[in-house]
Length: 357
Ligand code: AKB
Image 1 (tube, rainbow, N blue to C red):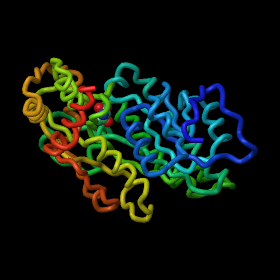
Image 2 (cartoon, rainbow, N blue to C red; image 1 turned 135 degrees about the horizontal axis):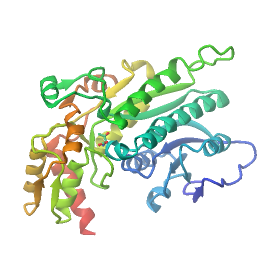
Image 3 (cartoon, helix red, strand yellow; image 1 turned 90 degrees about the vertical axis):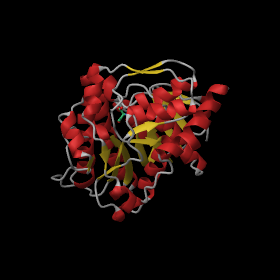
């Protein structure tokens, strides 16, 4: 069934007999992380990928999926059809409105980021009751779940643990923090008063992505986007007006390392996990340090710093760095790329090749 054509939300191919196909569901499949995750799962030999996004997927990504669905995760009818069609064993729920975009439509962001996640957690519980096995629910939260009140506090706090400064200042951060708690509820307390309660339906696993930098895609709608935007603009020979100050510092990770960490967390024996949430990072450069490396590799890079005060305030609420020791200890998180090798071995060669085509 690999590579079946896309299905509009309104129509699914008829179910062959009464048997449902076992599948892994990926939401937000058309996004940066979705592309990388589908490739990684396909490379591992997975041929049971069901991918859903609001827009049709790139043909090469679509060909790696058993089924692709163009639809909205908030569409209850669509989730019902997924229940009828597939025995979902794993869900990677990547669909979200990121921090900048969410600030223009905060209520819509809440509906998608929290309402959509709630619907999928319910689907996971229903699936588990239906096929009798817990459903693994892998959820990317974000450093945006943290919120420091001002730059002085951020600087003084330095590297923070997963359970510190959980006072987000963005709707996106509030949404991610709410979903972290919803996941924990569905895993440990779902329908706790029901006479027919079935325990352990949802195996919720959550990691907080820092700023992500991909050589293959340029992000949109995020407030950490200045990193990837800067290097891609340099490779295209375009001027880049950086929307944060030169001294702005937050944690980052390359996309390959984020994908590896996501699959490591998904694969590990649940009993080895010591915290409900895992922070990840590889390097925390200032925007100025990042620009210096971009200019080193792209000497003609035309970069200026023109802070957008509102977006700057968001990034100033995010930590300088995060403690990823629990991820390294519990599931072997070990990013391949530090800042220099990220440029040398991954970003520059891949981005040059991308724009040379
Ligand atoms: C964003 O900028 O909103 C995201 C994030 C840090 O989670 N990239």
